[in-house]
Length: 383
Image 1: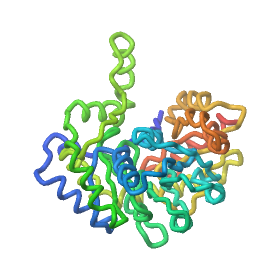
Image 2: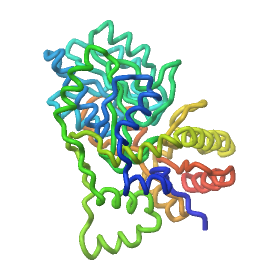
Image 3: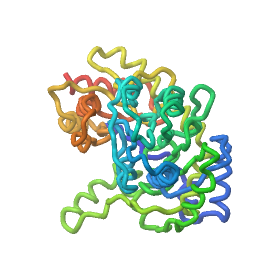
Image 4: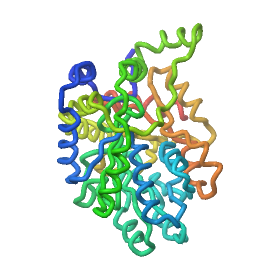
């Protein structure tokens, strides 16, 4: 029976070879390539998007030490929250709209007197209204981080995403557009505000280059790329011996040459990845109209999206749907586990949506038959 899995990265022999035998000058070459797709001369290569956010926050704190709060969309990656807490700043959640992006209407209602910055995330690649946010920034004197962690080489109103505000963020961890490995296998800080170039580079220069370990490479391949083939072995290993260390690497460092070499290979196939994903998403959008009970979470036109999420009935749990799909050889997952947002006010819409959505596979190369087969099973499950 056909097995439909979620693809964490599009790696081939080139990436495997680059990981084992990285070419000299990989960091400089990837830095040059990234400049070409951001149209920015001021980019710092780091070990993660989390590190990029922390450096941005350090710079902004130094510029305006009297402000202590950072506005974050209530539906967001936990790496953003960890970075803000690590810098000793306060998190202020603003709820999301129906597309899981920061609600512009709710943002306009905020008191910005103590707001240092707004983290403006394009959720799974769906563009956020950056022009309105930047206009609010100019009026209320807060900084803006254009969080394009999920995507590269995608334009919004003529400008590359990540190019708005004071800083832009890229991440190259699993499930992103370009993937250098698991968490902490690559990130980039794009410095859009010329006043911050020197101070951002100063903080980055104080960091060591991240360690290049063959163990991290093997772990990523074993757990993420070969998940379907290795899950039985991992089950017995963790049952009878011990669980592997899957903790996040949260230390700050600069990107290493191995991850840069892998990302150079990813850069060469970037256009194919983007067009391939867009094609599959459009197949889902078209074929979903044949299924009256199926509804996409985000309203997508021709956008590039890295994860495609579907609503599930309010009387069903994500785990129930997940297990039912698993029995039919369809891998699914919850995009973010945002249970911690319940500790904060102003996250009602985010929690309501997140508790009743699930991601389905959007592997490049899927056919209409594949998509229709998945949606047929999905409708059966949620019915």
